[in-house]
Length: 99
Image (tube, rainbow, N blue to C red; front, side, top):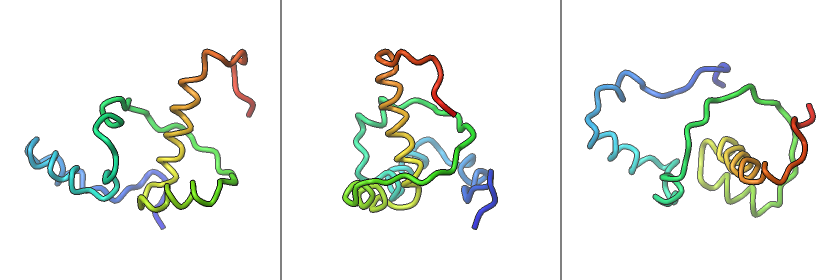
């Protein structure tokens, strides 16, 4: 198990890649398979915030779909929920979410 704040990325190795090699590595990364270019182009940088550990109930097919895309599925679920929240904030009268 990784310690919080640690990852398995080889940042020094990535820094030595050319732009072409980097794009190739991304194209071959299984975490990005099945992600459309349109989705990627509409993405925004999200600086990680403190996460709250909780239990959430999902329909089995939704869980299977996200987990079927491999490692990082919880992060992808969080990203989808964040996108939905941000797209609908204008309809939300609350100023702050409950803690």
